[in-house]
Each structure stands twice: as C-alpha cells, then as structure tokens.
Image (cartoon, rainbow, N blue to C red; front, side):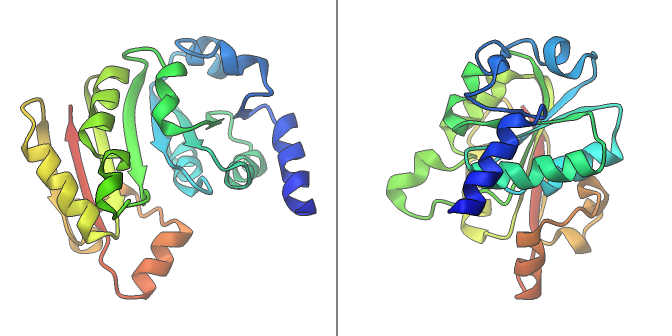
Length: 217
C-alpha cells in the first residue's frame, strides 16, 4: 500500500500525466496540441494502455507524432509515465480516466489513430457492451477520430477477435480492413513494429498466437 501511495504521489507531480488533480484535466478537450504538446502533430490514442509499453514504444519510433495512453489504474500510469520520463520523450502523455468517458477529453476529429492493445476481452455475455470493439465504442471512435483514421486491435484472445470481426462485418462505414490470426507469421507484421508488451510476451510463451486487425472508420 505504501508503494502504491508513493507512486500516486509521483504521478501527481509529473507533467506527462493528466488526472483529476491537474488543471488541464478540465480544459484539455480540443486543446491537446495547443496546451499540452505545443505542436500540430497527429495524435495517436492507445486505450487501456496498461503499463504504457506500446504508447512509449511508438513515441520513441515516431517523434513527429503525439501519443496518449489512457487507463484508469494509477499504478499502471506510473509505469508508463516513468518509461517516457526516463527516455526523455516529450511527445507522450497519459490520461487517467475511464475509457467510456473519453468524450469528455477529446473533441470530434481530434484523434488521428486508435490502438487497442490486449484489452480486457470481457468474456461474459452481460459485458458485451464493455468490449472496446463493441458498437458503442466504435461510435465513440468514429466521433473522435478524423474520417479515414485507422483503428487497430492486437490481442491474444480468439473470442474477442472473432467478436470484433463480426462487429466490423456488420458495419457499412468500414474501409481498408485487413486482419491476421498470427501477426508474427504475417505480411502485416511491420504494422506492429515488433513492440511487445509484457502480456504479449507471456501469451506468446504459452503458445498463443497474436491476432491483429486494422480498419479505417
């Protein structure tokens, strides 16, 4: 408990974390480029970013883009913000909030790309609407992302992957859709930049294939 409190205190003082204790928390919507990043670069959003390995990894590879990781868990945010801080990355931010509330923090068309990396599959039927590729969330992405933006999913979970395929195929506003059930044996591998989170390494070690899909909405 003491360690967790210490980490919460650290992120309260970190400029790369936007949370309820920060002034920007209430005013950042529509103003990420002006008030945080201080540039006009495209914004990539990683939802349920966990420890932030993908957000930080992408930011290191693409300094000409801005990256925001979103998660509700303060201890996870601490890890991601620490990685970004240690690497001196100024094109990274972490937002601590529930994903269902991101409409409160981004204006329509403010996002240029969305990544979903190993989100909770929510296997129970009563939790279908909570899956990050359900119709409810798809409409959020469509609203906040510029037309033609990519949405990308990387997962080990076959049930979530199949569910997402069905959701996509039921829509009429999808373009440039591609998928693979084994990204590391696929021509699409380069799209993931070989960034591997801790969870991905664990899943792969157990023999799970890593599924990937992307589409424009």
